[in-house]
Image 1 (cartoon, one colour):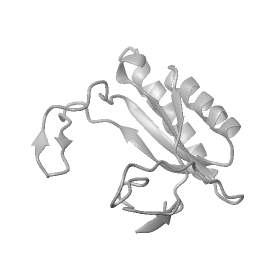
Image 2: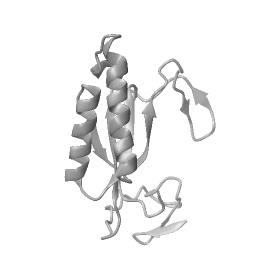
Image 3: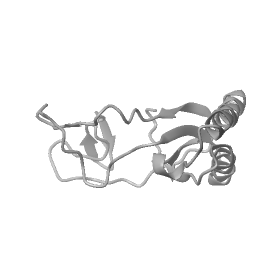
Image 4: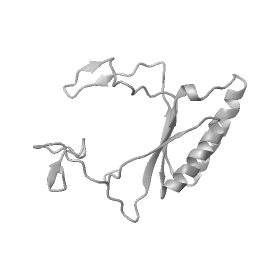
Length: 145
């Protein structure tokens, strides 16, 4: 447990008070901390012929290797669309009903970077390699990760 804004919170769900209402705290950036960014695309955004696929795959892997060499790569991958997603409830029950609009397909990369400008540059490199637009999202600061 950690004290957040005068309220003790459960680390598995940051911002939720253990004995009170939901508390949302503004993220706190630290001078040395870098921010993690999610760069992603839905599978329908990538329209390739069978001949183009190996070329695009090689180009995308080259950008990932560049990110690894630069020390900014955290992890990434493609979503296994042949495996159905499930929703696991707080009580442990499992359902095939997922949240509306939460269907994640395609691929994603998580990078840790010092600025949003650099995140946009990397997203641009990935977009060029994948031949499709990429969505860029910023993770909230979490000192534990």
